[in-house]
Image (cartoon, rainbow, N blue to C red; front, side, top):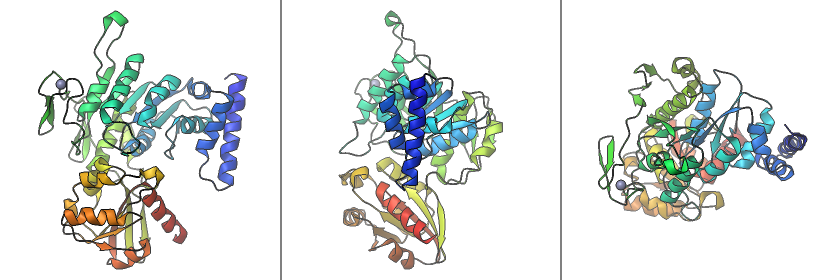
Amino acid sequence: MPLRAKVASSVSRTAAALSRAAGRGDGSVIGGWIGLKIDPDLLAHLSSGRAIALVSGTNGKTTTTRLTTAAVGVLGRVATNSFGANMPTGHTSALAKAGSTPYAVLEVDEHYLAQVLEATEPHVVALLNLSRDQLDRAKEVAMMAQLWRAALVRHPDVRVVANADDPMVVWAASPPADPAHGHVPPHVTWFSAGQRWHDDSWVCPECGSTIERSGEQWWCTGCPLRRPEPQWTVEDDGVLDPTGAWHKVQLQLPGKVNLGNAATALAVAAEFGVRPVDAVSRLGAVSSVAGRYAQVDRDGRNIRLLLAKNPASWLEAFDMADEAPTLLSINARDPDGLDTSWLFDVDFSPLRGRQVLITGDRAYDLAVRLDVNAVPFQHMRSFDEAVRAVPPGRLEVIANYTAFQDIRAELDRVN
Ligand SMILES: [Zn+2]
């Protein structure tokens, strides 16, 4: 590395360590920010010489990054931004902290994918899904797909591992060849991880016609865009690889969603030459991801934490949760987005028949939504009160971002 980059990297590590010592979080944002101030090309310098995978999408990227890191670990040491700091400051900090590693797997906020592709020149990029996120801040889904597509056109050498079930992702990953400008379509490996949420992809991003669906197939009624044949699929409780071999996947993480994330991780790792048969047992060692899916025992209750940030991830959380008493907690602070009208895009009827408890700053918004959905509920003033209100056994907790952090902090205080 050039001298400036070495100095920047070392100062970045020190700043992050000081921030941690001062009890101000894991320090990865401030460390990266200072490093990039000293050397604006620091992320590029730190990336050079490493084989890198980027993982992006609206949902599942933290978990998929964690699983992919475990799978690529078959080959050697892997740097990763495991605490969800998924913008260039977080990437810079993670690589500076890891020192020299042959591999890196980085979770990337979908808005920053173009910039991070430019800086890191990855070997492979995984595109998971695109759906609406925070209504007052995020870009429209079709605009994100357009940004991804433009970024991939500028990087024809990067290999792409993409979700065949999401029309927006398929369109973004298949820019047309343009021989006049030397554009070749990217090399794409398709996986099928399912798409439970369809409400952001009824309109074709190419031609504006309606997208129709039947079973797992989807197609545009006005142009050739349709579901490509995936090479990696989920079958029963395992993953089918491109050779037709089936691998049983025993995860500690719940739900079909995470089996899809495991298929994605194996597909990305295969781009580095990792055989699924060697990686699959490592996936089973992942027990929680930045506190998500963590299980805590308290007063005879086994409490499991599920994070749900936007309509698509609420549907996934209902799928992951057991048929057990369920506490829902909603805040609308800055990191959550201030607009809670998305609650009306989620069908809460899968919760009927369970004991449902609600809490959080915006519990009353949730109350109105549940009432419209004819789901009975009890309002709890605190997490503690909720724990006491359910019988011994499993308590599922589904919360959005800051509500999740509040409950984690509450549990940490006691445990
Ligand atoms: Zn179309």
